[in-house]
Image (cartoon, rainbow, N blue to C red; front, side, top):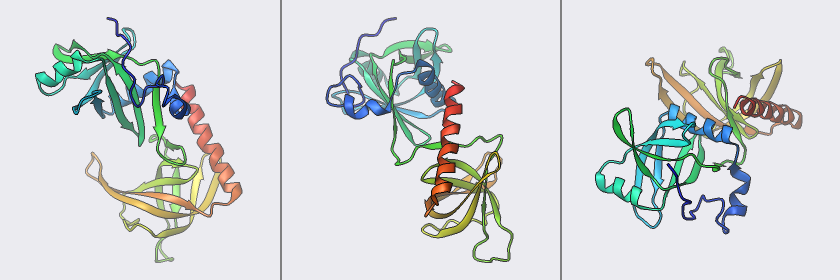
Length: 258
């Protein structure tokens, strides 16, 4: 199955008005493109297919990533009219969010196919995509199997035991932490002084954290978990350097595993 080139769109790297702006965020490595698409599939993330020159946006999901046939299999749209509009056009724009990062590309023409004996849609796996981090600092997720801890001094009762939290993700600008006891609280705008990030290889970063957002999340086992998104306050230069090396090492290891 062949796919002609799609019309330029806001995430098309060949579009002359946008190539320079999006070039720093472009991913051209096929291995990394497949890694990202498989992560979107595994997590069952919702995907928008934005049709050029149309008011329609089709919400779908990735059913399979078929690298051998160079195909991305998508769930069919709700309604024959939408499917027909997708397949009769010159292409669509694929847009989703993975770990707070926008993933997008111009898909080219959409074709009908079957997946597990059910109607589906398919597009070519793109030769490049845009991975746009909408944060000042790049943020990396921490491994679940071997969690990294952050020790938060008890608040406001200094005589109580410190709160041991798990780091969900981290960047050079902040950290997301989680714990299940309920002791963290959900108030935003407060400062958590003298927190200790117990990074691997005996590296400890000591810093104050400003709570920027908070959420209560119910896990699959029924436990309610508190998650706080925090910004580093007055991080000393030597601590910032340690943190930057740690974040870079995590991202390098992830890329090498592709």
